Length: 142
Image (cartoon, rainbow, N blue to C red; front, side):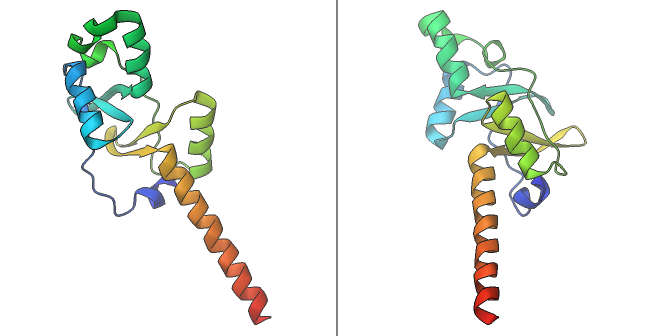
C-alpha cells in the first residue's frame, strides 16, 4: 500500500505559507484552519515546514519578537518529503524515526499533497479493520 492510495481523490489545494510571510500571519492561519503545520513554499518549491513545535521553540528563544520574524527564520528546513510510491509503512517509520508529524508528497519536485501521521494511522487502521472483516466473513461462510 502506497501514499498514492492514501491521497487518491484528494484535492490538490494544500494550505501553506511562503518564506516571507510573518510568523504572526502563519499562526493565524494555523489557528483558523485548526492544523498543526504548514508547508513553506518558495515559489513552486518546498522550502521547509512550519510546525507548532517550531513556533514554541523559537518563542522560547526570541519572545514576542518572533511574531514579526519571517517564516523562513523559524521553519524546519529542509523538509523531509516522500513521493506517491512510498509505502505507507515506510512513511510511518520515517515519521517515527525523525519525530515528525507531517510530510509533503512531491511529484516531479512539486508538492502534490501534505499528509499527517494521523492520515497514515487512520488509513492503516481502516485497512486492518477491512482485513479483519474479510476474515470474519470467510470464517462464517466456511
